[in-house]
Structures are given as structure tokens and as C-alpha cells.
Length: 220
Image 1 (cartoon, helix red, strand yellow):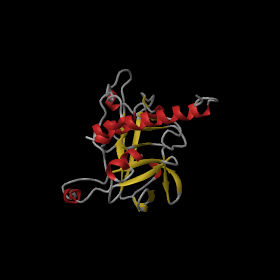
Image 2 (cartoon, helix red, strand yellow):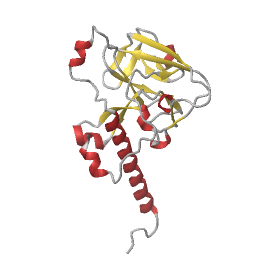
Image 3 (cartoon, helix red, strand yellow):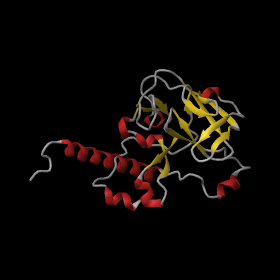
Image 4 (cartoon, helix red, strand yellow):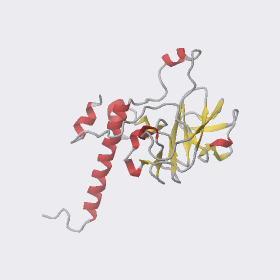
């Protein structure tokens, strides 16, 4: 548990729809990724292409994973429902979608207070309600495309959203998992607490900003 959240929060967080942990995720076809050839639709990438990563510059794509997801009309399991990310919610220049198990690299002083590093990966499912992010039923089948690299990487999506791309894991790479992870992937409960705390902090700061702009707000 993150004790530092408990000191900042006046109430517990509500998981009315249980989130899902970071998994294989995937980016929807049409999502633009920063590459050595500029911003390219993720589906246009191939093994051997180079993509700009958050920590390691241009890295070569070793594998492209493609998947079609069809969600039936009507009621669906909320935990499988894609997340709609409004424009600018996570530094994305256009509205976009993320699968609930897609990892997103977040930056916050709250994280740095705890681990000395302001960055951590959270599953997109825990972002429900943060900056207008919500679950929405898409009107068309989803074509998911994910670039894989030799190691875990974070890539730039639609100008500034930071998407986590875990390296493939199998019996041949299980030993590699014993090394120190490149990125801190928060467990569900910690990730949910973080996003709740960030929401409350931003709401408080916004309220203080509005009060400061109100004439006579602090006059006695």
C-alpha cells in the first residue's frame, strides 16, 4: 500500500467497475506513433522500422502484433470496454481510444514522493473519470496493433501520450524478468489510488486558482 496517499486523501476511492491490470494492451489502428519517418499510423509500421522511445531514443521494432477485437452490440463487460481519451487529456492532440489493459506512463509528484522517480505505468482502466476519460462502447470493430521491442519501451502517441510496450515474455526470456524492471508498473490498487489522488489534487489546485481570480476572495 502507498501510505503517502492515505495522508493526502480525505476519502477512499470507489471501484464501482473493477479495473484490469496492465497486459498486452494494443493501440487502435489509426493511432499515430513517433518514428524516424515522422508521425506514422501504427498499422503502417513493420519489423525493422525505428520508433522514438521515451528513454532510449530511436529503437528498432522487432515484432508487430496485430489483433481484431469485435465487441457485441448492447451490454458488454465494462472491464473489456475501451477507454475514450478526450483531446489533451494526456497530452494527446486528438481524441483517441485505449484498451483497458494498455499501460500508460504517468508523471506525478505524488509518485516521486514515494519512489524518488516521478514516473510509473498504470493501466488505462484506472483512468476512468480522470480528465474526462471514460469507458465508451465503440461503434465499429477494433483493429489493435502493438509494436514490440527487445526490451520494455514507452512510445509517443498522438504528440504526447506515453504508451507502454512490454517486451515479449516466454520461456526463453523468463530469466530476463529477474533483472530490475525498466519501468515501475503499479499494481491495480496502487494505480487506482494514484489516479484518485491526482484527480483530487488537480481539483483542489483548480479550485484555488479560481478563488485567486475572484475579486476580494481573500479579503478579510
